[in-house]
Image 1: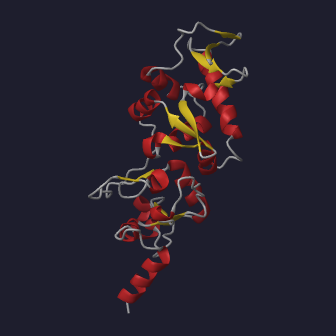
Image 2 (image 1 turned 180 degrees about the vertical axis):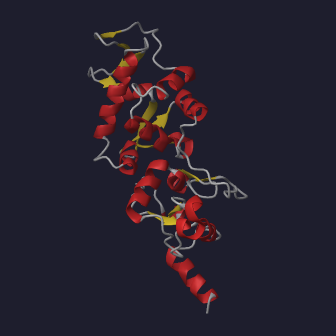
Image 3 (image 1 turned 135 degrees about the vertical axis):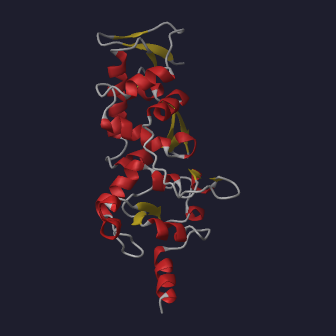
Length: 257
């Protein structure tokens, strides 16, 4: 059985079972916009989870996208953030029978699934991210929802025109930091082509077809993502599953013979 705990700057003591253990959307808005409460690492965690279908993913996958060594550092930051929030709000969390604290319970619901621990953003936190414009999800104006189902069971990802992995801000940043801004297909650099207005503009493409992923698949932003220009990105997704980068290069070469 779990009991709520009072989060206090002075002490941690068991609270009444009726004590509120979750923040409201308005309180999460205050938390997200207060840099003394929400660190860049914490915001990266929330944004990474937001990009997934139903805003949930294994903690280990969140860590891999962000680039930490396992999810231990994320657990530590969750605990630190919960304590910071406890200094401002009278809020409780829960304690397990073994007397350890479920700090993550303030931000996520959680469950074990096939050996992985799944985090899912609390609805109030989702609403707050959207209201503050801090979702971090990259939406390109040329993205048009395809006809048919918008959710695919394989891989548990959301697909609009590109999937959630490709729009995830943390995964994008790590991919571009490694590969640069040159298109992996046609080798165009948008800045060289369009001048300053094109500097730093590039899409990111996931090179493993959704149908090939397993439910426990863990993304590697460097090995699994590639920068591509908008035109090549659209052409890659003209097929289902998408064309490979080498396959599209071959089509371009054939068209210019």
